[in-house]
Length: 179
Image (cartoon, rainbow, N blue to C red; front, side):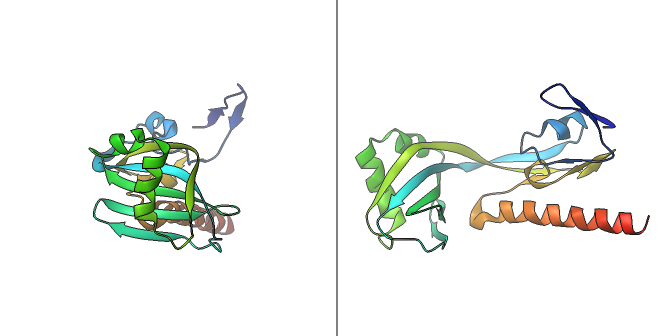
C-alpha cells in the first residue's frame, strides 16, 4: 500500500492508509485480511418520518420482540427510523401501501411526537455481523465497519467507529512524538 490509486486515476503515495470504506471494504479485501461474518435473522427497515411535535434533538429506542426500533432526530420535525424486523416479515411490511405502512409504523413509533407520516422512500438491508481477523496490515489500518460490523442496537456501531478513529489518532500522535 505504498501507492493508492484514486477513482479519478491519480496516484497518491501514502505511509499509512486508514480504511474506513465500509463492511464490503475493498481495501481490507486487497490486503487479504479475512473476516468472520454471519447474518442475523433480521432486516433493518429505514425511512424518514415527519412528525407534528419537535424531537428536541432526542433519540429514542424501543426494544421490541423483533428487535430494536430506533428514532433518530434529523432537521426540523423529522426523524430517521431504523426498524429491526424479522427477516421473514420485512418484505411484506415493505410492500404495504402508504397508509398500511404508516399504521404499522405508528404502532411501534408511539404518539409522543404527534401525528406521523413517511417522507421519501423506505428501504431495507439485511443485518449481519463482521469482525476482521486483524485490524492492521502493511501500511493499512482498518477502522469502523471495515474492521467490525455489529447489530445496530443503540447506535453502537457508529460509536465504535468514532472510538476507532480517536484511538488511531492517539496512536499516530504518540508515534510521531516518540519519533
